Image (cartoon, each protein chain N blue to C red):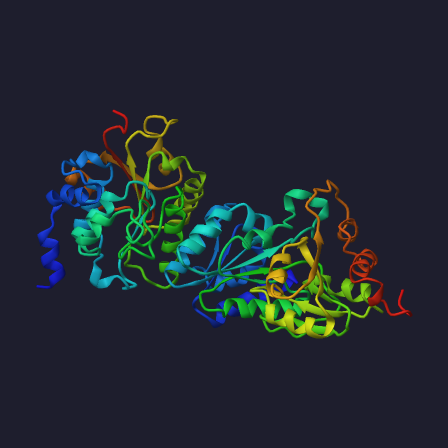
Length: 235
Length: 304
């Protein structure tokens, strides 16, 4: 058993609120404090073939956090999985901390991209999938996480409209939908992916089994989108 | 010189498995054969320029060396934030190769003109900028750019060209003529006009095909014999390299005149030569402006 495995075992899902509390000073974070927490946990716990010991492995899966706002849940998960030392968390946002209010891939171990400006992750994920394919790396899967309001950015639609017809099977997008877009139609998110030829599923973004089933559903020949619905941001 | 782009990069695709080409419809025909041979390394994303740069960045993150091409307006200006963040902030490199330059297609109007491309890149850190003035130089500089590790490199191709190629090394200013009463730096395709314009003037003419990083040491060396009156003639926005020249001469008294494409939108169509003249970049206009700046002392009596 490696130290990493021991660390993984040490920090479980129920520890995430306390890890987030180290960043915010608030001990009482429930899972609802951040829309992305459950999606991130299920991905890192059960889906992504990544780990600190294979950070430079060309065959690792790639997870690109596009929605860089509110990254506490992301840092908590990275700490729980052994990418980031837990003692980095209290410095969150300070001048000497690698952990900013938007992540920087150059500073954060395990972060595949820096984000903050919305609408950059999915196009970069498309290129990552293309680059892996061009090098014959057929195993790694590429994931990106975007928000429902982030989907307002037109750059996403350039990527969605290309990736479907291009048949980028290794590409996956999870849209965390907390109804924060000012202009939206019911079912509109999945419909836009489907219209571009993606496989798309909509599930309860707090239900770990439903998330896992959606994340691992087969989608031969097409990229895959999962819309993870959580409680509305302003409810 | 754009006709060299696809053949040169096609050879590089054959030679180096790291090289990939990313296009947004513009220039696709030139890569038809290469795409057949390397279907996964020649990618056309359609008319999607944010994706063009973003996808190139993603490819670079996996270890490839992307060569990205479209008109300058749609390569640097439209997806500027992708250039800034997806390449610069992510810490990855690419070779951006533009066509159409400042006004290569005057009949196309202002939408297809990008005189501000180099100035825009100047707001970012770590870019190398090549401005070849002849197809042979373009070929050399394209190879240089692709071979430059994971650097961020911009290659500005233009239909405007000098009549003959000069040796270029991807770094330094090249002395074309030596004088004692001023230094004129001609960038890329303006060299022929500058040589015509300075015929009979006692000035040094330096030829620049790599403008970033700016060869400050080369300029300083030239001013040792020719004095510190410096004229920059650039085929893009006037004054783009004025700050670089000032910085190179910061510790000595000097004067810098920056000539190039004007900021004002002409709202004219027509031909390239008409736009060259309208911006005062034809030999006759340049002679008046350069001559006026370096002063009567710089004129050899027999000159015009």
